[in-house]
Amino acid sequence: MEHVTQLLLILVILANLFVLGSHPLGACIRAVAFQGIALGLLPLSLHPEERSIHLFVIALGMVGLKGFVIPGLLFRAIRDAAIRKEQEPLIGFNTGLFLGAILVGLGFGIAGKLPLPPHTGSSMVVPVALSTVMMGLLVIVTRAKILSQALGYLILENGIYTFGLILAAGLPGLIEMGVLLDIFAGIFIMGTVIEHIHREFGSISAHKLVNLRE
Image (cartoon, rainbow, N blue to C red; front, top):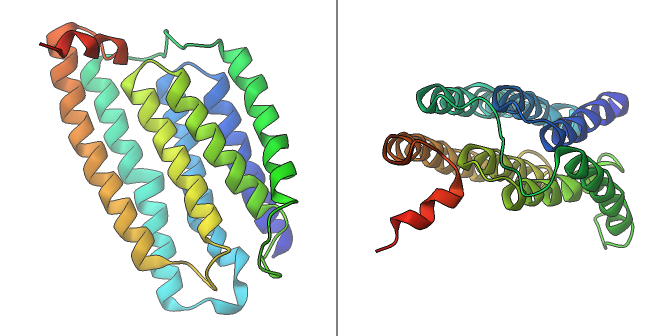
């Protein structure tokens, strides 16, 4: 199953780079949804000796929330706000893609110096997790649209989730489900807030929030 694990991790990295280098929000949401599906399946290939009905159920729940429910809420938000593209990034998309490639290399460099458990399932897990966290932060700080920043937050959480897979013998199901439910609630609330911001200011740029001060 090693080759399946590596394929899933490569897809995670490609999804990160796609988000950094793209401006259509719909395509970025699909990339993060695809990443969520890959991560939902990852524990099944990473820990094949510990497969159980419980693990399959939790993995299915991860795929459902990360790959369909949360992206569905984001699609609803961009439809209600009538926003299709990220047009106000703090850095260019080509620059973002270049920085993302640097962060991938940095993730591999840092991972080689960390004291990790002897059996991590795959040598790529930690580098991919670290680079995903860093690329999520990069999306958050370089995008102006609130929806784009929400995608960065989801990427960041996906990186933390990936790193958590090596700290447990299997999928930390209850904890992760709790985190995902918090994100689900946050995305739902965010969609409502975005709708009100767009109605008030005609934009969902985070820069417009300065107009809310007294």
